[in-house]
Amino acid sequence: MFQRTVAPDIEIRLLNPRDAAAVFTAVDRDRAYLREWLPWVDATLKPEDIRYFIEDVVAVQWNDNRGPHCGIWVEGALAGSVGCHPIDWANRECSIGYWIASARQGQGIVTRSVTAMLEYLFDTLRLHRVVIRCGTGNQRSCAVPERLGFTKEGVLRQAERVADRWVDLATWSMLEDEWRSRAK
Ligand SMILES: CC(C)(COP(=O)(O)OP(=O)(O)OC[C@H]1O[C@@H](n2cnc3c(N)ncnc32)[C@H](O)[C@@H]1OP(=O)(O)O)[C@@H](O)C(=O)NCCC(=O)NCCS
Image 1 (cartoon, rainbow, N blue to C red):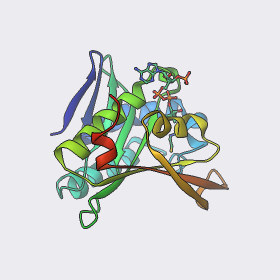
Image 2: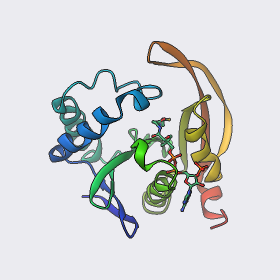
Image 3: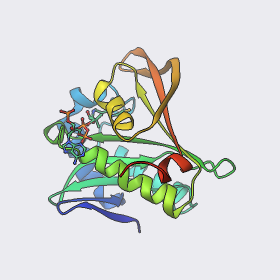
């Protein structure tokens, strides 16, 4: 089990198949807002779709020591997600992704949840490099790695198909020595 308290009313917790209904409700409520940048939203049509995803990231990824995929819980309610894509242990690297309910935007919940995830990835797992990729037009998403001191490496042109259009992805990274020497 992986759980971190981010702030008094905010925690991140490894997703459990039992969370599928809560995650689906949050996604379904914000479908139009989320589908603009997240390619999996249109294919998420029922709670079982989320349950299959959670079973996969827990059984295959977490149990195989390749990183957690968490729900973000605010005042006890599911408000979003922050998760690793499978860790590449040969290079001690992984990328992370996130989303937050529209009603919870602008409160620093994601930035602080990503910070808790980075503490685990750099301090506990001793990863060397963490990457965040976001659509170049997704200013709120790009603001998260920028706020945290990541370096923008470049742009992958038309690298992701989202909502029937091609999205250019900005790649941001942080290295372990940058994490340890960052201003807190
Ligand atoms: C991208 C996304 C996660 C960003 O959410 P967000 O709410 O802007 O990010 P945060 O929760 O970190 O909030 C940042 C804001 O809180 C403010 N804030 C308040 N308290 C804060 C704190 N303690 N720490 C950091 N920021 C704080 C920041 O100043 C910032 O304000 P601003 O928006 O006025 O500049 C959200 O827009 C989203 O889910 N979009 C749809 C899905 C998506 O695009 N996912 C990413 C795909 S790559």
